[in-house]
Length: 443
Image 1 (cartoon, rainbow, N blue to C red):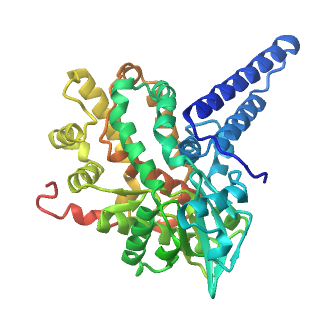
Image 2 (tube, rainbow, N blue to C red):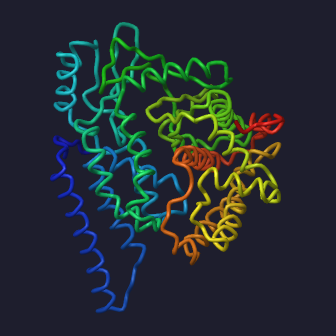
Image 3 (tube, rainbow, N blue to C red):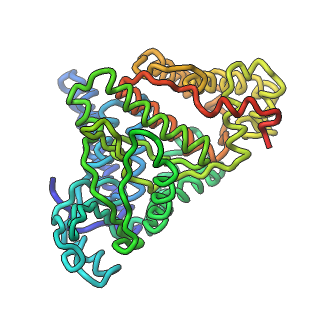
């Protein structure tokens, strides 16, 4: 893959790249409709693939939050046309890497030394490149190491990038610019944390220690003395990414066992630690020959406030909507319903949330759940289509739901999607059950 020898870091450069890409997409549409007008032929798939290619190429050169958005969208099956989902999935671990001279420049900035002054061996080419940084393999004495280097300028561009995508997000989800500030603040906060490798080092060590007793999980050891604000060094873990692993045609027993390991990992974090590895895309997991699963990235961690945690899982409880008063109180407390809503809006939106929450919470309250069940995921995608076209939803400009739910929802969607790809059937009745045995679970 061709390396980048420069990165666009100023706001004017990045804005110019966005504008140029928009013009390119416009030209693709013009070419498509001109061909249709002259020949009568129309190839929508070809148009989508070309647009996806052009947009991805632009985002992969910009890196940072721009590419991170593409990566996040690729995890939400059914949200985008398949051409975009397939292309944007490359952002998970195979984006175009930066050239070696730029890597050396980063080391000089933080260690006043080149990589080969610090390590006995250091690969000139990256072994993996994603949205925030890229990974090189190194050796120091007997240690076999993975060294993650952040792209220059990523942290400084997050705020300006999010300002550029505000109009697009607002149009896609029918949210006014004023109402978006609350939610984009949460996204910006998590993205800024992802650029702080000192924080990732601290959180990685903490969660790895806390989850060490979960059978089947493997974590790398981190090395603070070989790390800095934009450089993170840990053990190198062998293993296959999910797409590579699936190509080995694992049997159902193996799929189920691995799915159970991943489910137990998330279940423990959410219900015991009250903080969670909130970036469950396939690029952050390694599937190993001995049947274990390696977890290699703790850049995005969401801490769950106690009151939000209790209300969130209370409202997922089976048949909660039949307890009308309690259900409505929870919807108001979680800001799914707003004080400004009319009685008609309260009735309409509470019906919508009852259906959505019942569906999304189904795995929590089953003894086991078959994530290979395509009909379950088709129902989720169908609900999304129905409510995106709902007249009252389209009319409402207010953003709904607590900001704390953004990354927890993202975590569950990513987890469900991975388990669906694995076609795993696992035991899912979780620690959340204990919540409902308490006399007064909401504090």
